[in-house]
Amino acid sequence: MQIRLYNTMTRKLEEFKPITPNHVGYYNCGPTVYWDQHLGNMRTFLNADILKRMLLANGYTVNHVMNYTDVGHLTSDEDTGEDKMEKGAARENISVWEVAAKYIKSCERDMASLNILPPTHAVRATDHIKEQIELLQKLEKMGFTYEIPGDGIYYDTSKFPDYGALGGQNLSELKAGARIENNGKRNITDFALWKFSPRDSKRQMEWDSPWGVGFPGWHLECSAMSMKYLGDHFDIHSGGQEHIKVHHTNEIAQSEPIVGKPWVHYWVHWEWLMLKDGKMAKSSGSFWTVQGLIDKGYDPMTYRYLLLLGHYRQPIVFSFESLDAAATGYKNIIRKVADLMNDKSGDTDQDLYQQWHDKILAPVSDNLKTAEALVVIQDLLKDKTVNNTTKLALFGFIDDLLGLQFIDRATKLHKLESVEAPENVKELAQKRLEAKKSRDFALADSLRSEIDSLGWNVLDSVDGFKLVKKQ
Ligand code: AMP
Ligand code: ZN
Image (cartoon, rainbow, N blue to C red; front, side, top):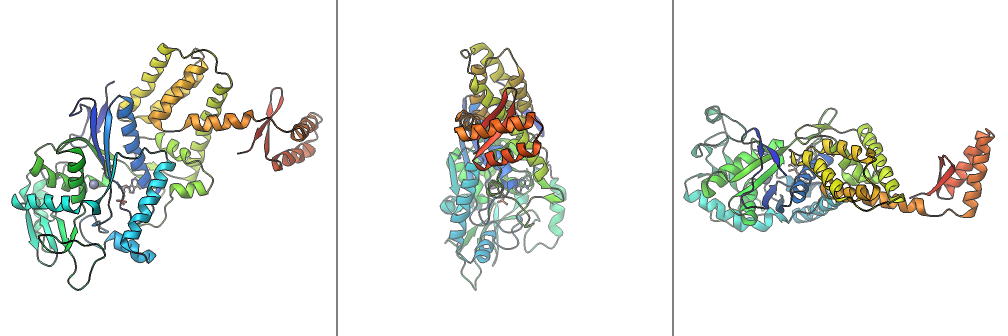
């Protein structure tokens, strides 16, 4: 099936053509692990997961790399401010290494709760210091670097004629910025490749290097680790949209002089998750996590469903009202899938299966239009010409593609509904039915409470009532 992706570099929707037939090399920028990942961070990892699942559904093998930034990311992406990891350690009064381990674990837990497939390689910057130093040495030999004494080794962006192409930045405007007071940098856009440790104190994370003791600049890790795990050229690189003008622009500047152009074939960027009054951000202090939603009683799949109702190139404003609406929509589908399980008539109709399979996959393959696929799924549920067995088989495919765990949740519901209620509960339900018929609603309500306290839900049905064991 044809796959199209919006490529930030060309600003066009392009047909996807892999470098190696049937295989995709894919790098998605991962989190800085100094705090729990909020729902916004998770939106980027979930988008990456949908992109990967779409490629898998189209028959590709995918080598998916994601980094954990555990060193070098300063509070400003432009190499100024405090070290985020050291800040996290001070906040919690533990070591930087403990901070990294703690928040890698919480990130993995939340990704698993959202049914995000683990990357083929989830790699830590601190495990790849050697590779980063080697890359820097190559850039140094080629004349791209200079030293700011007492600060670090910097990349001279004026040496790279294509600098800024990804963000459509005008080089002469950027160069004009060089006249601005700039902490010793030759150009305003120059960035650190290696930062020296302060002379008067020891950092918790620091390494020897040919230039002195210190730590790598934040952008270097993604160039070094992608080259190690994906080779010199690979297919897709993605990340949050704020990475276009700085982080990814700098990654390109570090990589293309070494491997040649184009280093990456498709650049994909994710829009943000917003709150009413701005971006959901760790720095704002007001953010929600996936675990926070679970603790409030939400099924994490409702958050996944909410995100898939939008498009990755559009912001989504998060609120509990929209989450509740998504939960209702999600549960409606579960209800219908559980009903299919009550009557698995007929065999899978292969022709119809293939037709609907393609109808569902087509919008997702077309630049990840998941919301359109969800509309097709509603049409499938309504279509009386498709038997239940075929529909259930298609839901197996839908779960592989969208990761919404419909079959799992519907199976649980179906099992609960299949449990026979004990006699005393049935009797109470019968009495409630009679109370309702004689319009004694007060009695009917108190009987409902009694049934509820025994662990059962009583539902009205055409032939009287239905008893469903509570989860
Ligand atoms: P960080 O841990 O701050 O480096 O962020 C990890 C990833 O989450 C980056 O790719 C960011 O672009 C992304 N991110 C941060 N905030 C949001 C947000 N509110 N919505 C979507 N993505 C976000
Ligand atoms: Zn990166």
